[in-house]
Amino acid sequence: MKRLSLKRFTNHIFLKRAGRALLEQFFERYPGLDPPRVTNSIFAAETAVSGESDYYSALAAFFMRPERLSPVLIEDLLAIEEMSTAEGLSRLERCPEWPGLKSHLRPDSTAEDIALQVWLLAPEVLAREHNALRFRRLTSFEHAAHQLIPSFSSSASSSETQYAIRNTQCLPDHLTILNLSTALDRWFAAHQRGIESTRIEVYPIEDELWFLIRHGDLFKRIAKVDRQRTDTLHFRPRRDDLVVFSSRSNELRVNARTKAERDLYIREFGLHLCGDPDYFSERRPYTLDPLRRFGRDALDPDGVEGIRHIRLCKLAVRLENPLNETITREADDLFACPPLWPFQRSPIPEQGALERALFEIQFTGSLKPCPVEIRLPNVLKLSRRCDPSAVQNWLSLRGFRRTYDSIRHPAYIIP
Picture 1 (tube, one colour):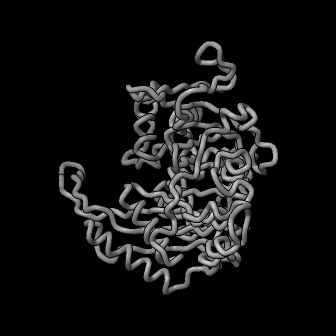
Picture 2 (cartoon, rainbow, N blue to C red; picture 1 turned 90 degrees about the vertical axis):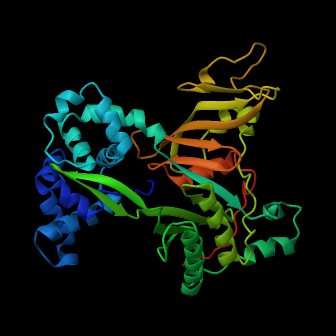
Picture 3 (spheres, rainbow, N blue to C red; picture 1 turned 90 degrees about the horizontal axis):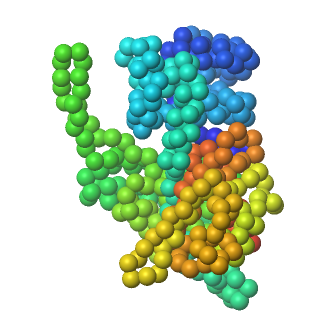
């Protein structure tokens, strides 16, 4: 089962704002998960305290252990979270059932409260709108690999191979993280993101290091209203970026809002982790050629743990003509469609450059398929419910990764 990352239900402030009455209504739909019983039986020994505040804290801790939750409950929690965003709320407000639903909402409800109440009032409406939204709720990672990736081929010299491994053998110590934070702070300060606002948290997960980077964003001024009184709120928002170092492929995966920030992370992580700002300079790790070479067999999940089924749902092809024409084809299953042009045997065009593909992946233990998108040359988009490790295994096994298709090495030793 994939790792789950609930953002709101693991936040005791959100739970407290929603209120015990609303939460108890939610748990009434799941008789085996009564919040007071959960708090007393599972967390009493750990917290050794009581009271309303401890109820919300213990409940937040409970949601941090997804292995204790049923797949149905997990799907409902994720749907509520994803529909509590501004985009999700906008979709709810445009649905035909909204006029009848809004009259039943509590006054002064937040977006999170509204999503939870709509689920309680009409779960089928929230599920329908969430299905329409989920293909837009992708997490985009830009990949940057070590420039000596070809050295792991059979023709590579042992010295080149040892060079690539030697640069990634040690976990970053406190001084390295401090120096990295200082370097990022200098860039953020010079680009109006605030002074000394960077904090880096490191999480070793399997054979990867996940770096959560929290920093200030551009200053904002927004109008606020409280009944008949209006005012202006001045604040600097917090941004959360993510950098993942993969020891298996000796590369970085970067999730950040702007290209300048992504380039900053690739440069500074290369310098402070590996001693070279150009260490992660290979920016073309992906290819869509297996769709042409192997057809539907390229989607076969056999041999990949955690994946049950894969479908190709969308494909963008750039035709090599003076007009630079791009054709995008979309269907529930493109390999079930007829060829686009006569005298071709496959629905994948034989001419043109394949630039973008959207897949639906059914993970083991998940009720709904998840979208995964590849944008050449180096962007991978995953929904929050995806299992990144299983996706990478499939891409490598079927040849969608240009390098490290079958290479595994102990580049990063994580205790």
